[in-house]
Amino acid sequence: MTVSMLDGYSGLRGKRALITGGTSGIGLGVATRLKTLGADVVINSHESPAQVAAVLEQVNTLEGPEMVFAPADMSDHSSFDDLLGAIGAVDILVNNVGIQHVQAIADFPDEKWQQILNINLSSAFYLTKRVLPAMQSRNWGRIINVASAHGLVASPFKSAYVAAKHGILGLTKATALEHAEHGITCNAICPGYVWTPLVEQQLADQCKVHGMSEQDVIQNIMLQPQPTKKFVQIEEVAELAGFLCGDLARSITGTSLSIDGGWTAG
Ligand code: NAD
Image (cartoon, rainbow, N blue to C red; front, side):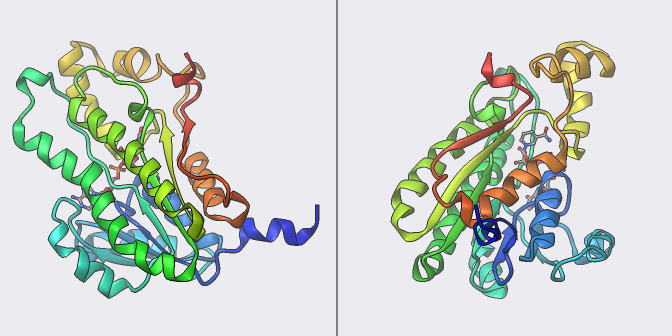
């Protein structure tokens, strides 16, 4: 092995990355890792610039090009042309945005189903479609879809989320096959439970539908299916995403990579 063989892993200089839902949790972790690998990173959310100013200020104390913010609501694709026009050609797209709603199917609000499909699944299609032409013209691109263990297996009370995450694995495969000859890879990362605001915010609803205390939900619902009995750390997901962006991952495409403490092995 030569040093130049390893350069592909650390060199994202000159690559522009867009991370949807990048101001918190896993998205911010991935954004931070890509920045330290040298990428020009744009993080998106539906928040205002003032709301994310402190996050940006903190992350920009780290090494790497300055990270910037591009607001857009991922439930409404009518703004995506303007969003991408303002950003410029994207080399790395991380479709990370995701929301959750925990309720039995019989009571699940129709508008919540639609909102989750729009944000967790359709935004990935609409953005992928728009960034691909420029990737094709440069013969290089990386698309990472942050799916979930719930892209591979279901849990009760999460119908829309599970459906969207299973769907994004299909989109991942189709995208990979259509662009395999153009130096563009598309893969899905399937984390188990990672302690982020998304998980914290669903605790109350999980307690309600399961009739359990918070501690019981954490032990018996969240960590029970993960044989490690530990939450996955944001940094672990971020490192995997960084690897997938490198040239040494050029032959990994159309697949889903589980990072779930063994959950889906059983
Ligand atoms: P999070 O709640 O910490 O972050 C979600 C991000 O999305 C935030 O930046 C938020 O501002 C943004 N966002 C929410 N609604 C938006 C909208 N309409 N338009 C634009 N941005 C919006 O969540 P997280 O836990 O970091 O989850 C990130 C991804 O990882 C999601 O796709 C989630 O399904 C997936 N995931 C999370 C876990 C977990 O245990 N946390 C496990 C598996 C998969």
